[in-house]
Image (tube, rainbow, N blue to C red):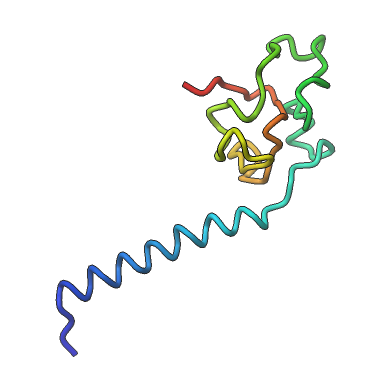
Length: 104
């Protein structure tokens, strides 16, 4: 069977879009990071940034939260989104950890 270039391109676009949409749906099923998680404890992750131990994490400043961190892989308005610091588990938009870097 001979496949034309056009058929190949159309099929490739369809497969790529399926993977893109599928990965977005997979995040919806991803687990939330519990504060008891060993990585969360090491990074001082809190679901509510206002509860960060400021004595232990002097780097924390008011206004910093996951929703405005460059690692947060969702929109700031999303309640939870994946974060690569936690193996793409979901973190709270209003959360914070010591890996925080302000979004440019």
